[in-house]
Image 1 (cartoon, rainbow, N blue to C red):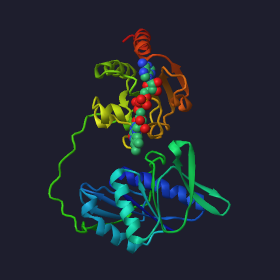
Image 2: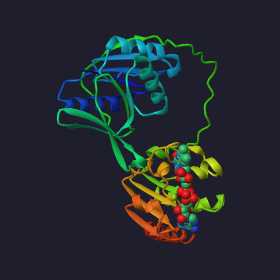
Image 3: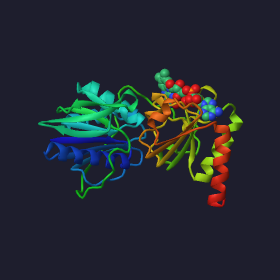
Image 4: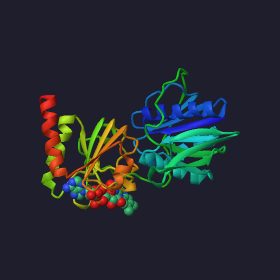
Length: 306
Ligand SMILES: Cc1cc2nc3c(=O)[nH]c(=O)nc-3n(C[C@H](O)[C@H](O)[C@H](O)COP(=O)(O)OP(=O)(O)OC[C@H]3O[C@@H](n4cnc5c(N)ncnc54)[C@H](O)[C@@H]3O)c2cc1C
């Protein structure tokens, strides 16, 4: 069987390699590994039989080149990490080659003779299983498959980027804050329980003492504009998987928690003991955040001598 990883960075290819390795183990058949790297700064990643390098800063200027590689390799599985640009590219590959596609796969497993790809649904409360059939295109949830480096020196083939009707007239960088909550070990989440923008200073202080970052629910970033969109956690924001997540004044809507329930430990603070967030939490504190946060900061400062 042949597997093709499509990625926009070396680290995405290493995650993809791990997926193909898992697929080999679960299917019990040797998966011959191919990769396409679309990047303005392509690097050689070991572990693949063939590595196609497309020197381009944009997937939109390389779609036809990717299609040609898919047709040449004729892989039984096409894999990418579930990053926005890759999902966009993969869905177009799937549609153009008449393959079926599954996104955000978190698990590859076997039941009898059949292999299944599983992805969370219903706000992370259930897993949907899709039968693996040859030709499938799928993306894997970021971080679910630990990146690996192989030994095999790939045959490197450089391909010129070839677009399909797109012309990039200019590139305008989106304004970004310096924060990267997706890789933070500790995240303090703030929600509509906070009554004013100034009150978020308490959460920032708590995050700073803990060595973490502040994240938020959608209303805080999208409706009130109190925090940058880079801090928005949820299906339409960032996905986090910290060691500790502290959602404070957040009710626990599925669209929020689905992007946070891979956190190792969740400690929720909410004044409503029936708030849904407690269903997803390892520890729950039923308290008014305006009393709880200052008290917690005081204790932490004493204990940590900050
Ligand atoms: C298509 C779609 C996509 C969406 N995408 C996202 C997304 O990506 N991310 C996201 O977060 N949401 C998303 N939402 C919105 C989501 O459904 C919820 O509306 C939102 O998450 C609620 O935010 P919240 O928990 O901050 O506010 P609320 O639901 O209003 O919760 C506030 C909580 O604070 C508690 N509280 C109030 N005062 C205090 C106090 N003094 N002390 C302690 N607790 C207090 C309340 O008990 C309550 O539980 C999406 C919705 C849709 C329809």
